[in-house]
Image 1 (cartoon, helix red, strand yellow):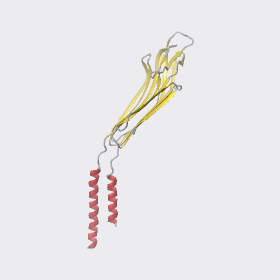
Image 2: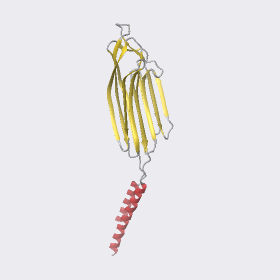
Image 3: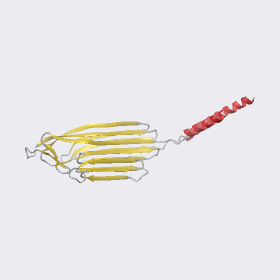
Image 4: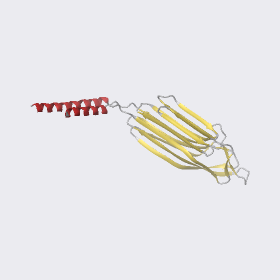
Length: 268
C-alpha cells in the first residue's frame, strides 16, 4: 500500500515539474501634469485664446493589429488604445492646464514584442491657437520681463521580467516649449530598462521650474506635453520537459526497486 502511495506522489511531482515553462513580462508607465503655473516678475499671465488639449494613444504587438487613437479639443479630451498585450491612454484639460498619460505591456508567457505610448498635450501645435501674454497695464510698450514656469509632475515606472524576458523598457518625458523664442524652459526624460529576471519600480514626483526672459504685452504660443512609453520583448521559454522527464523516470525506478526489495525480504 505504501509503495502505491509513493508511486502516486512521484507521478504527481513529475507532472508538476514537466509543466511548460511560463514567461512573464510586465511594464507599467505613467506621467501626469497635475499643476502648471506661470509667474512673471512684472505684469500678469493672461490667456488670449483657449489652449488646445490633445490626447494620443498607440499600442502594438506581434500578434494584433496596431491600435491608435488621437483626439483634439479646445476644452478637454481623452484617448485610449489597446491590443492583446499592450495598452495606452492619455488626457488633457485646457482650462486647468493639466494632462495625463499612461502605457503598459503585459506578455504572459508569449514570445512576442509589444509597445505602447500615451501622450497628453496642451498648446498650439495641434491646430489650435493657445496664445498667451504677460499683460502689463502700467506700460503698454513691450518690455523685457523674467517669467518663471512651474510644472508639478507625478508618475511611476514599473518593470518586471522573468528568466525568459529579453528586455523591458519604460520612459517618461515632459517638455515645455516656447516656439516663438525657440526656448525649452522645462524638460524631463527618464528612460529605464531591465534584462531577464529583474524588477524595477521607480515612482516620480517633482516640481520642475524654468525661467525665460520674454516681452510684456506680446503674444506667445506655449506647448506642454507628457509622454509615457512602455515596451518589452519575451523569448521562447526554455524547454524543460526532457530534463524533468529523465529525473521523474529514475525516481519511479528507485521507488519501484525499493518496493520490490521490501516484498522479496518479506517472502523470505
